[in-house]
Amino acid sequence: MSRLTELLSDDEGSTLPLILGYVLLAVAVTFTCVCATDLYIAQKRLDSLADSAALAGSDGYVILFDGAGGARAELTDGGVRAQAEVIVSAIGGAAALLSADAPDGTSSRVTVGTTWHPPIFSPFVPDGIPLESTATSRTALQ
Image (cartoon, rainbow, N blue to C red; front, top):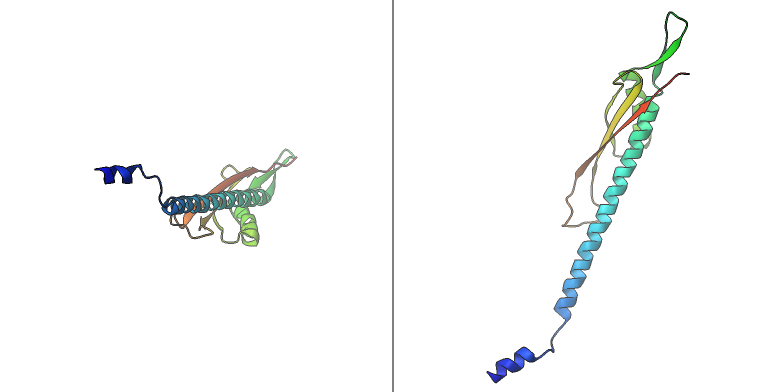
């Protein structure tokens, strides 16, 4: 029994497994933070692209004159889509135009989407997350 008591009270030993465990944990947390940051930036870029495409889509209007001598700007689905396609193809990269329409004739609504892939291999983060962003812009004629 004295040998067992002596072994249990001995505080000498290898700290290498403990250090390796902490290093592995630090690497996993670092990889996950890098991937989360890249995902956030990819979503913000997609939001900016959707905003730009919606703003360009609101320039796809047709001027209509009414009988009282007034004029108004009317957006059409085709005009919004044509303007949004130009912007998405110019600066979209891997993003695609999912929809572009003029729901009420004065607003352009554009939805763009892409698939995000982690920048570094990480078994803790899934690959191929679909991202989508929708933006709306209004047009006015004064």
